[in-house]
Length: 142
Image 1: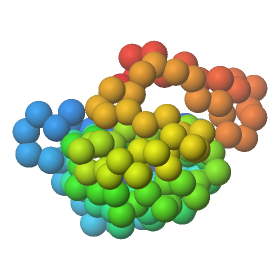
Image 2: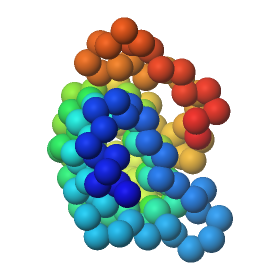
Image 3: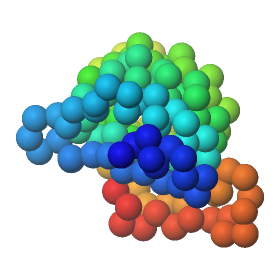
């Protein structure tokens, strides 16, 4: 299914989460690779999945327009932070802050990235390529 979505040029926001209420949702083989093909993706919610640092790094390196990334309840740790901080457009990162060191939080505060812990707030995401509907409202998305 994600391979079919990857062929769509109009996807800006995608939520693949289960709100980590039970066992983590398994990302099938090829899922991350398919997500990496959605180049206009600006918001991605993977809360409660079994996404790893390797997955997060690959996504951050492949999705140049990503602005919001939700990773709470995943297997992601502080090891993905260099890729997070190197990303040019990321504005909001939702991550289990218990896996971060105090020095990580200090470093993240020096960037433009807002860090939350399971509570990404309503906001707007600009269409990364400036199409006519430049601002997408995310109210109630998460």
